[in-house]
Image (cartoon, rainbow, N blue to C red; front, top):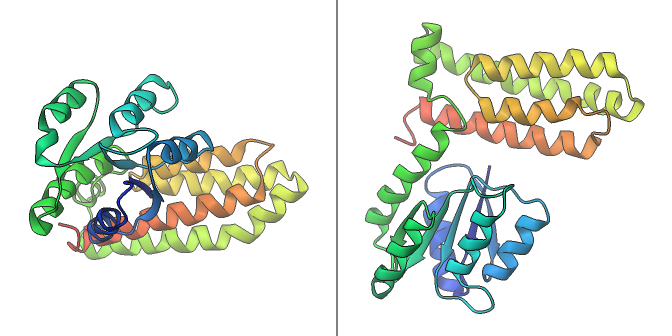
Amino acid sequence: MKVLLVDDDVVSRMALVDLVTSLGKFQIVEAEDGEQAWQFLQSGLRPILCCCDIRMPRLSGIEFLQRVKADASLNQLPVVLVSSATDMDTVQQAIQSGATDYIIKPFKALEAKLHLQKILHKIWANYCELPATTMKRLNLKAERLLTYYQALQKQFDAALAPLTTALHNGDAATIKTRVDALHTGCITLGMWHAAARVERLRNPRAKPELLATIVAEVQAEILHQIDLANGRLA
């Protein structure tokens, strides 16, 4: 799971990195300004969240937000603006234009963490069912649900080598069997985003490199679910 952090000030960006990494297992992508962040998105980067400073050279946070919202393939990306208190009028305008929320800098660590945590939980709810909901739906206790997550981890590990070979050889039957099993496991545990990622492997033109990327991303999502189930991200 990737989070894109955009700020031309190195120290502020470091603080953002520390803030986000304190909230879960995310792969952080850093951009020095809005233009670089936009190029990352144009190159195929699809983070679950973007935190973006407002005042930057080349392309400001507001201009970056406008580009994102105008692009049909990107306009669902949650963008949280990072602003100083003096930018509040601009922030309110940006919220009306589609910004998800904002955080104020210089950061007050606990306050910023709690605020961003709420935002991430809302975003995550669109990607994965919360473990408490999964437990209720499957009539499981927490300890048993953890064994389900661990089993799915092992299933993805075990599928990596045979699927890589099948993709190299164009072995449609093996690809279907393996992808069906992985997809079913993800759906069973309410991991909809992971299931959608796995579906991409049904494409006969899918590259083995894509498989490695998807497996790594899904494993990160499973670890995130395990942390939620254990109460570490409550």
